[in-house]
Each structure stands twice: as C-alpha cells, then as structure tokens.
Image (cartoon, rainbow, N blue to C red; front, side):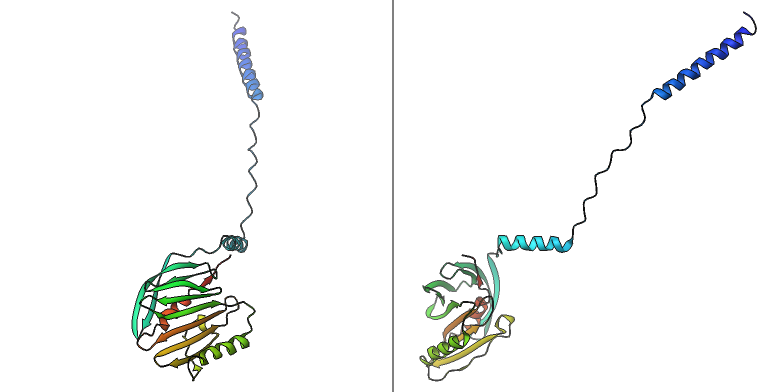
Amino acid sequence: MNKYVKPLFVVGLSSMIIAGCGSQEESKPAEKAPAAQPAAAPEKNDDNQNKTDQEKGNEEGLIRIMEQNIAYTVDGEQKEQTAFLKHNDNQNYSMYVLPEYELSAEEPNKDVLMWTEDDSVFMRIELLPNDAEWSIVEENSKAQLAAVGPEVKEAQTPEDPFFSNTWAMETQSGSDIVTTYLIKDDEQPLKLTLFTKEGADHRSAFLEMAKTIMKEDK
C-alpha cells in the first residue's frame, strides 16, 4: 500500500468515527425542562382558623364532662365530693349534682334540688327570661319571704364572679331559714330559693351546684 494511502485511510476513518459521534449527540432528544411546581398553598390566617374552629364549636354545642369535683361546706364542715352531670328537661339545662342530693321537676319552670336525707332541705331553681323586670321580681320575692317570717333582711352572697350581680334576701321562722338569690346575668338569669334549717345548713352546697347550671338548646 502506498505510504500516503495508509495515513489518509486512518485520517478518513477517524473522521467518520468523529462524525458518527456528532450525529449521535445531535440526535439525542433535548433534556426535558423540569415540571412546573404546583403553586404554594396560601398561608393560613390564624385568626380565620380560630374563628372557623369557634364557629364549628358553636354549631356542635359544648360537650360537658360527666363528673366534676365540688368543694363546699355543711354546717361549717369543709367537704369535697364528685358531682355528676344531670340533664333537666323541664327547663332545659344541665348541672352537676352531688351524690347526697336529687334533682327533680316541681312544676313547669320550677325544679327542686333536695337533700335526700331530709326533703324539707332543698333549693328551688327557676330560669328567668332574659328580659325579666327585676323590680317586679324583687318585689314578689320579698313578699314570698315575708309570708314565711316577719323579718326580711339582706343575705350575704358568695365572693364569686357568678354572684357578682346578685340580689339576696333572707328570713327565718323558728329553725327554718329561707334565702332567695336573684342572679341578674344577661345570658342566664336565675332565681334560687334555698330552704334550710339550723343544724342543716346546706346553702354552700346548693350554691356551688347552682354555679354549674347551664342552659341547653331545646
């Protein structure tokens, strides 16, 4: 073979190989562009979220636990017991009742919570309308107390926010003591009349249970 032919053959072969590689590189499909990322979700507004949770809670209604400890006194003796949730259909409310007491309907719009050992010791519960005329309610309450005992005087109210706007009067006949509390709450006005006696002062227990009264939807 001619001495010039061999180098040219090698050069030609090399050119073909390089050309072939170039064609392969050019024939490769272009790399795909990265897929578009989904738009970031808008940040939650804490205020709107809290509002939604609150509205949901209001729609579902408050769920009360089945029992609650209550501290109280009877004739000066400090006690604490577990009270159990009771539902009242007569006036549509629930409250926690201690084991030694019983809640029952007395008549429409009136219930009694009595001491099971002596049913003459009890508390009458009346849920009043939100637009109650307090001057009339006070006048009627005084007249009812005056029918029990000749002297009607102001009664002490517990130092508790529940009784922050409360009218309280009391009378006594012999050993029997009758005390009326008008809780002037805009959302849940109440009239409580407590019938107790010397040697069986359950006013603290009755009032502690009354604090747990909560109206329910019909």
